[in-house]
Length: 139
Image (spheres, rainbow, N blue to C red):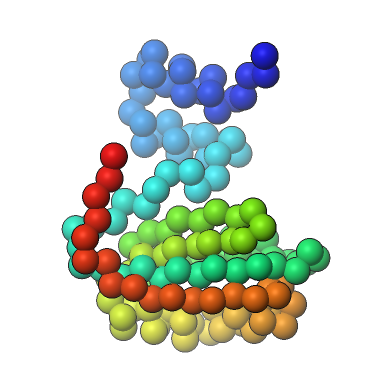
């Protein structure tokens, strides 16, 4: 039976009753987890930007730029959180307080550079959808 490190840590956290948030951040710091929890968004309404993409097989520099964009987005006024998954298709959903905040993020100088690289080097195809979240619920 193969034992995965994150399973062991979850079991230890449960037994020792650590605060979950501190524990998850520790796992991320140690490299065992990436963005594995869902964004904690406020009560609606708010906006979601859904970025769906298909990358070229060789996308040199992509991961570094994606990390930089994640860090930069968090510093923007109106940023609420994000969720991301990638297999054959990448889907990133970022959450924002207003359309104005989304427009400012799209026009950010460094983000414009990332968009240019995306069109010229990294993506075969992408699509952006902007949605008003009127209701949400969770389990």
